[in-house]
Picture 1 (cartoon, rainbow, N blue to C red):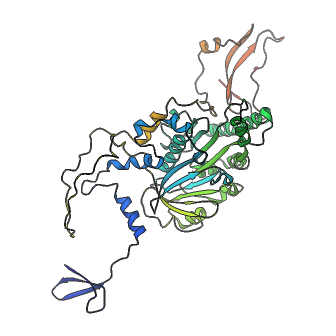
Picture 2 (cartoon, rainbow, N blue to C red; picture 1 turned 120 degrees about the vertical axis):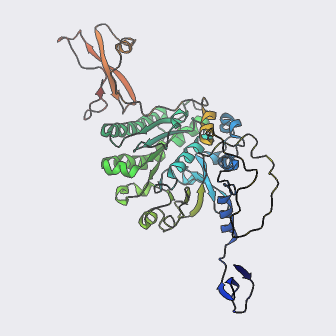
Picture 3 (cartoon, rainbow, N blue to C red; picture 1 turned 30 degrees about the vertical axis):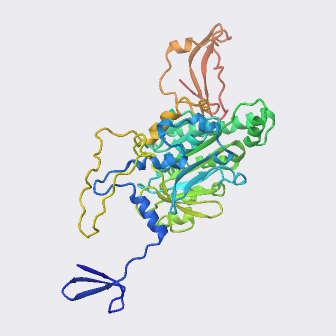
Amino acid sequence: MILAVGRCGNGSAMVIRHGGEAETPARADRLEPVDALVCARLLAAYGAGDGTDRSTVGSEWANLLGIGEVDAFDPAARWRNQNARDRLRAPIGIAVDGTPVELDIKEPAERGMGPHGLCVGATGSGKSELLRTVALGMMARNGPEVLNLLLIDFKGGATFLDLAQAPHVAAVITNLADEAPLVARMQEALAGEMNRRQQLLRTAGNFVSVAAYENARHGGARLSALPTLFIIVDEFSELLSQHPDFAEVFVAIGRLGRSLGMHLLLASQRLDESRLRGLEAHLSYRVCLKTLSPSDSRAVLGTLDAYELPNTPGAGWLRTATGELTHFQTAFVSAPLPPPGAAARSAPPQEVRLFTSQHAGAVTGATEASAEPARSVFHAVLDRLAGHGPPAHQVWLPPLREAPPLGALLADDARRELMVPIGVVDRPFHQSRAPLTVDLSAAAGMSRSWARPDRASRPPCAH
């Protein structure tokens, strides 16, 4: 085959000769510089001929945060020097022009995108990786006094696996699909958290919002920190499909969350618009990865852009409340941790080869994959976060599944004479537990528990 480039006799810019005198007129595809840059960035993660990732892939997320070597990352120092612009803000990927793309859940008045948002992406689109990137970035940028996370996975996948160890995480709730009582319990816990924050603001000085409360605290008022609670719910469409009444909780958080410091990110594989009634007005930003139907893309973005995305995991669009659309590629936090000094290591000499239509073969000197599974950036950062800052307030206590041992009940110092503990009362609305006791000094020899129910219409669960 002969490729001739240049103005040819037939007026075409290029001809292809397959042999003999046969010529096929052709025109080369145009590639704009910005598209070429995007293509180059996507290909940069791979070595020629060996199929393995380069060490720089794991550096991408760290570079976006400006933390250099992950194993040398000092969270406490980073949080001490945090500026107001970076509060509640984290990088999620790179735009097509090479600039960082960040998710900012502050109020628009603080140059943010708003407190509540939506994330939609089909199976294989990289949605789980994006949610992990969001969670990890928010924790790396914000200390536990500023931000706590409540992570909910309705189907019980591995999206939030291992995040429970972080000091920021109030709870990781999974495997709810076949546990209707746990869904009701979570509903109580979220309603209880809204009530707790309202009571705290009222008793601290009738503050109208968490922002006013925190301003007073930073101004010298003797107040405890009240971190923003970022609630990420994966597979929320499935949750609302099986438990439609849960929408009331989301709507309440959407309406009151701005003042109470409770922010929502609802994620799903697909979007059922009918489930968003009453909630859509509160969702200010939208993140949409690859969708399998034009209707899902149009419902989230107002365009078909997400449906037309390539099948590249992590490719997506970010839409702000103003309608601005940004095309980006998600940062890969599950990438292997680069070896120390990988970012500064000098590049090996480059060999120039003739570009032909034949396979180039393996690159000589390519590094072989290690037999040992590499430690990921995700787990390395979690290790660095451990032990820094106060633990998050527990919004969700583990469910009571097994009978408590008698020794644990008898060890309670609050027992009075002739008050016999017989169990434990679960109080999800109050995010606490209390002993269930029998008063043998009563007239009939027995009395009710002195652990009162959360609500008259819903008795507590006792074991």
